[in-house]
Length: 270
Ligand SMILES: Nc1ncnc2c1ncn2[C@@H]1O[C@H](COP(=O)(O)OP(=O)(O)OP(=O)(O)O)[C@@H](O)[C@H]1O
Image (tube, rainbow, N blue to C red; front, side, top):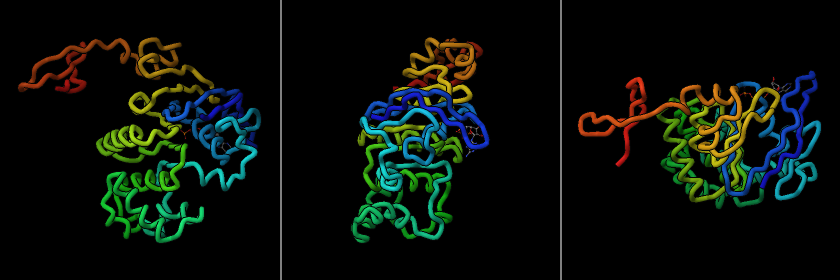
């Protein structure tokens, strides 16, 4: 469990990135922080692994203040996936995945063997392990980023817009794969995005942020959709989304959901 207790962050230049934010991320759940650019999402995420220390308040992991932890050891114990993969360009994919376990004392041979297994787990051919990051597509690099974050078998995964830089189709695939992986692994995930659809798909709970890290609303996706707490939230989740009435129409033998204006929004399953 991760607890943010009344955390604030004022950066040296005077910008208040986060003001009095409190939130609990229950173990084995995915909490998504969603908000527009500059709402303090990355700042909040980085407080968990001490890449940013709050100027007020504290962050607890399983009841312990992260400030009591050695930052290097703390960071190695938490998986972190960034938007652009953050892979080391001059190391092979396999070594990128194996680096943290090796730093933590696992033998090189063992770390490389488990790296191959992790690549498979995130949907990559282990043969890609010999390549360098630049020789992979954006989507493949993000998968390596996820494999690397999982390498030390952390309880906590921090994911900062991990699928933000890939095309919509690959993005969808990566989202689905993350859901499958999470169903299996049950990590405690804090996921940052500015994409409401992504937030609603992945989050057990979603925290909608206004500027300064202020919580506009938090709850299960269905709760937020059904009952937006303010005009800000209503606008943010899409003014028409909650009110959209869908009906099925038959097209070529399949049932397609269309909205009131007849715009197709998806194919009905079955
Ligand atoms: N190192 C820094 N020094 C000074 N100000 C910073 C620093 N990092 C972030 N800020 C400021 O803090 C505010 C919140 O930034 P943060 O990156 O946490 O927001 P965000 O919601 O993650 O935005 P984005 O979606 O654009 O990444 C912004 O106004 C930003 O300019």
